[in-house]
Length: 186
Image (tube, rainbow, N blue to C red; front, side):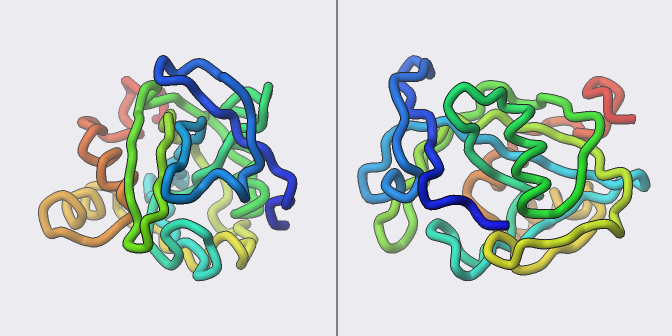
């Protein structure tokens, strides 16, 4: 299931408050306005993290390895509902135990072609109760890999493994293991 061409994203003022909406297909360009998004890190019951590689046809950062799922809440849609919706669309599965990790994460990144991402992007973690039940949308996800969280984080932050710019910044900001008791994941 792919995103509809008329999908809207929530535009934000510098204070992070909604100021309007715009079609997703028209938002990402060299002067991308600040808008609302989210990132989710999905774990299986054994504690492995679901690493995804973005489809080669994606408008921004095609083919890049990143967190489990990203997306944009629709106007008026609670972010946790958007997380569930996008995980169903992209990964074909349900989540449990959704937890907010970084409520105020914000970043701006520029692709080689000048396309800008400019997002207020709360970061979540969740559990996929059945990791064998994934059904990937090939227009969103090229491939996936279940990996050890600590090893992945070290590979990115210490060894320089390439990931999306938002994933790199989020990994640096996530001081603890997202599955730790403080985050309610275990």
